[in-house]
Image 1: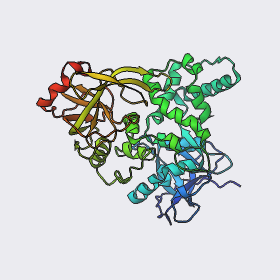
Image 2: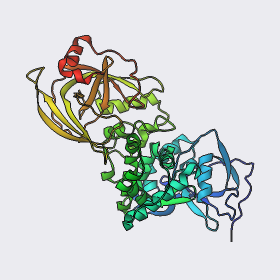
Image 3: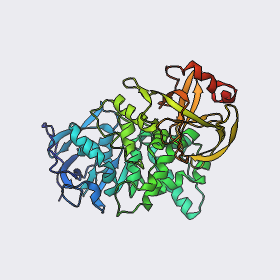
Image 4: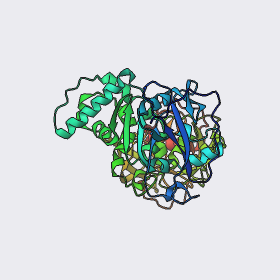
Length: 478
């Protein structure tokens, strides 16, 4: 027997506090025979942990709910749904997602951050966001909502499904979907949202949905990385670089054990590498450009950078810079800015002499020559590094240095009178003790885009500048 979807009531929904730590709320999306009928739901508290009062990570099993991965969309364009016969406002994109996911006969149990977390309660929000990796890893499936089928989205996703069949069967693909329609699908906001990285990295199973079309996440990833796809559609290299980390991580979901929770170590990276790869991605709050990466970090930086939305962005940003470049550096930021001025002592280790880009996975293969300590002019044979995909590409002539107090080197480029950070952390460098830091650096870090104009900052000390901008560094300028 169906529970009838009632008209949305005038009473606004009011959250009740969760009874204990480790509990979450789950949205029961009620069925309706009419596809366009009003949305009615129930919101129930659920103990995600197997032991009352413990964090969700103590459980070692999946649960019978699906976690939704989506973009909130325009917060100024809202529609109402009924939750426990009370009114709740959600964005248009979430409304369309719930409408598409609703079944005609059975309730569907979902975890949706905008509804299942009391967004007006900062204490609860911070605690629940800390559980996000566990929530997505313990879900029976993560549902990726790319949006409605408008603009050829459904046609493009159906074409990817057909290509998956062709690839497995070894048959030719005879579809007629246009490159324009495919680009329209792959350029949707979901692919550039920073939180989706953690959501797909934690998932054990993924379903990709656009309008009424859907495909398994592994098949989606398999096709986008195939020669068949690359030979059929002309996808710009910059879009391929943006898509690759998400689709690659999505394809690994099938291999993740269900007996463990959270994000596996092989799906994690150092915080510096994560910042280099993903700082240009979008977030509603600037804080999330840092907080969304913490759960994917190999180290646990929660002591240095606590998940605290009450702290100002400049406070969070400065903590990140000191964690990456050493506690002894001076960091200057402006309110609401994504560029930091960093000053401190450092040492030049060498420079980049050759760069090759791996078109398959976006890795950069670089050769380094070391600066001889006995002279200021000569370089010695160095090392070959494989750097992970980064928002900024390394160039020949870029300088390798290490800041006093930092555990790993940084790659910088001299331009416009000061140095810009290209790669904040070279994790593949074998650490060694550096006792002397004879140089004084002024750095700019974290550009919103790789091509952004250089922001105003202090010039490097004139007495030191000559040693960096002389003949041996000429090809690092510009």
